[in-house]
Length: 124
Image (tube, rainbow, N blue to C red):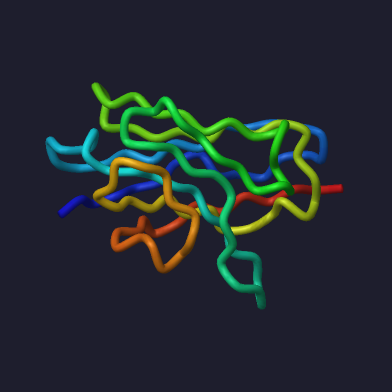
């Protein structure tokens, strides 16, 4: 099993940037494909970005492609999401997720392990 804790959410102005982090417990972080999802009030949880367990393959939703970058440091058991050019519609609770897999995964149902989320608020 793996436990996940997200950090870095805060209030930011539109056009700004911030970096979210997700720290995983355990010694097998490199065995897990990882993803970022977000959920706004009244909406379903949606895919943002995913990364393979080795970090060499990434995938993004169209809504964040070119603005967000997912990365991981397996030596530090940490997943990152670097965001830029933030828009009010990016405001949501951001969750990281993990699943034992060689490849990246993009569906909510693909993941068994989730963090508690971190709030990102974007002011216009």
